[in-house]
Image 1 (cartoon, rainbow, N blue to C red):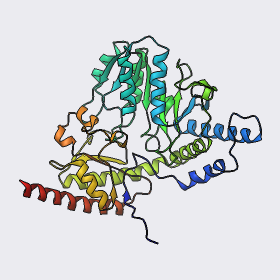
Image 2 (image 1 turned 135 degrees about the vertical axis):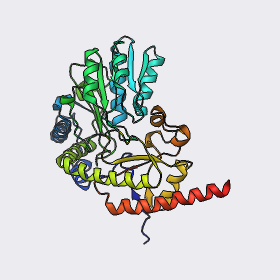
Image 3 (image 1 turned 135 degrees about the horizontal axis):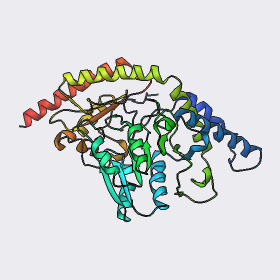
Image 4 (image 1 turned 90 degrees about the vertical axis):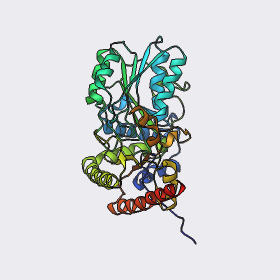
Length: 385
């Protein structure tokens, strides 16, 4: 039987492989422990206990109390829940979002704008960091909701969430941060950061797709997106996906168990890759800012990103030309445009993001193939001219 071709996977920011230990924890709840967690009988009690244990694991991973964890289907739902949920119990006012937010924050904010809210964008500098002076100026406008992601899914740039949250608190706003990319790569702390709400997702940390959480300060007034049986403190009705939630909890436990050592190893790999692509003439985006240890976003002049990604895929390397969640959008990365990157260069951007199983050999082979591919494309371009 022929072996299926499997490119070296360098797209962990899009999704991660399911950790075998996570799958092992999930399997009983995909078989004989199939109970509904709302049922009163033995099957239901086992399911409820599993959900409660996972809630404790998620809370421990982000420095929160279990009662502050609201399970959702993933990061997009959690982000929509906080933005639309707060808006539903408020009079139209001002919402502030970072200029480099994920579409699942930008789009609900635009929906509020169409419903009569004022939408303001917190600008970033050329490295992708929020401009503090401009952010502080926006806080004088008494915003009701502020959402700034902790770590960008494309550049990996990390924001000073604690300082931004403090400024928003002084303005009387609900401050939310999307920490989906941060969890498992840097320390995440709901309590220490002083945020009102925080989003995390399972499939970015070796867990299954279909599970996420909004970590929410119980003092925040919010309406549910999904009404029904009153699960998740009445904030997210619907029968819990017990197996996925169990997997999410186990993934959180594993992701934070050896965080410091794993992050250090990934940072070494990142720095080596940055040095290698820089020698090839690439522009590395966000290089002047604190970044996630596993992410490198770069481009070559006059090389199309989609073409490069396609050729690398055929050569055995799975990378991305930007965010997988917005891959249907033909426009250049909104993140790069917000950072002031020229549109032509932005169209050439590719993202390499690696995980616990990525080796130095993987990246060495990738760099060799990348250089050969880029040189080939440059030769074709020269001939065409």
